[in-house]
Length: 300
Length: 238
Image (cartoon, rainbow over all chains, first blue to last red; front, side, top):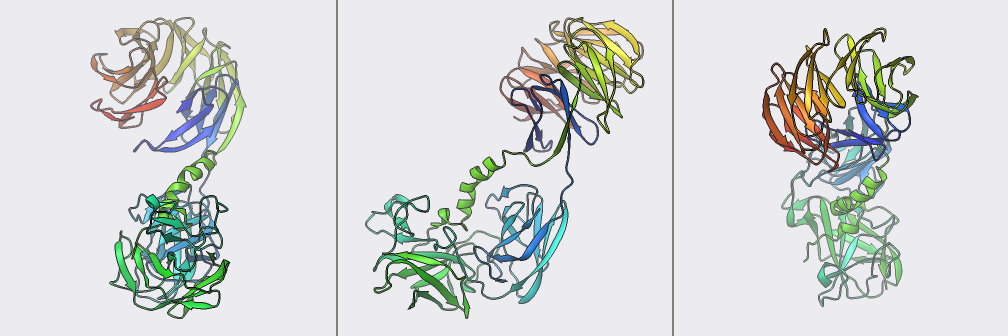
C-alpha cells in the first residue's frame, strides 16, 4: 500500500490484514507494482522509483551460555521455569504473546530436550519462554528455529534453577504490603520495594523492620501440588523444598514460598530487626542451589 | 498470604512485557530491514506495471513512460505517450497507458516500446486493468468504464459506474472499480459488463487490488484499507 502523504509503503499480510511492516520510499509514493520478487514504487514528487527487495532471513544464533533463567546467568534451568535465550536473529521482529502460551510466536519456535517451549516474547536478540515439563536432568539440547534456520545450544536441566526477578540490574522485584491502605499502588495496598524515591523511574520504597514483603522469582523447585507448564495458574502451590534467604549475613526463613502464577514464585518475608539499612545483599538457597549474585534488597 | 503480581515493573513480568510493547514498537518504527534502491525516471511518476521482465512507469508531467530492466533497474528507454499518463497495464504483449489529460489510451509494444495505437476513451482515464481479453479503463470524470478489445483497441462498450472511478482490478471473472466520490466499489461481470453489486467501503476509495481471494481497497480519506471477499463482496475487515 503506497502512503502518498507519509512517503512510505505498508506491507499487510493478505490472509489476516496484519501489518507486516512499513518502509520508507521516496516523496509522494503514488503507485506500486510487484515483479515476482520485488516491490516497485513510483515516487511522484521525486521523479524516481524505489525498488524494495526482501532480505533473506538470517540464521539464528544462540550466544555461548545464552540459555539462562530469567534475570540470571546461571547455566541450569528447571522445567516450567521462565527462561531467557540470548543471541542474534532469534526472530524476524519483536512479538509478545497474548497470554496463550504459544509454542510458535512471530515465526520462532524453541525446543528444549525435544519438547516445545512456551513462548512469551521473541525478538532478534532475546527470547523469553517457559520451559516445558520434563523429567530429564543433565545436559539437554536447546533448538531455536526460525525462517532463517535453526540454532542449537545446550543447557543443564535440574530440579532447581532459582533466580530472583529484578527491577533493574540488581534490585529484587518485590512489594511491601500496606494493610492500612497507604501504599502507592494497588489502590493503596502495596508499595514497590526499592530505594526510597524514584531512582528507578517510578516510586519505590525501602523496607523496614516489621514490613511484610513479597519477593518474586523463578526456578525455586518442585511444588505441592505440582503445576504444569504451558497453562495459566493462579493460587498457591508451596515449594516442596525449604527456601532460605540470606539478607546481608542474616538467614531469614520465608513464611511462604511457592508458585502463585505460571512459573512465578513468591517468597513472603517479614523483615526482621538488625539487617542494616541501604541496599543489602540478598540470596536465596533451595535444594542446595543459590540464586544469582549481585542482587540487593533496599532497607531503611 | 497475598498472591498479587507486582511484577508489572519487573524485568520478568509478562505484564511488564505488555507495558514495554509500546516502547518496543516505537523502536521498531524503523522498519524491519529490507533492501531498497532508488532509480531516476521521468517527471512525476504516477503509475507502474511489470511486463515479466521490465518495469514500466508513467510520468504524469513528462507525458511519457520509462522502461526499466527489473533485474537491475537500468533504464531501457523512454517513450512518448499522451497527456498526463496515469494508469498502466500489461496485456501479455503490450503496454497500455491511460492518458488522463487527453482522454485516450496508448498501446505500446512491450518488447520495443513502439507505438501501436492511440484510442479514445472517456473523460480523464486514470486506471486500467486487463481481463485476459479486454482492457478496462476507469474514466475518472466520466463516471464510467470503457472496455477495449486488447488485440485491436476497438471499443467494446461503456459502462456506467459510481462517482469518480479511479481504481480498477480484475479478479479472474469480474471487474472491480473503486468509486472515489461514492465511497463504494462496484463489481461488474467482465464478460458482459453487467453490474453485479455495489459495496460500501471507506472514505475516498482510490485503488483496488485482488489477492487471489479477496479485494483490497485503499481508502484515501479514511486512511485505511477495506478487505472484501471477492466471491460475495462481503466485508472481511477494515
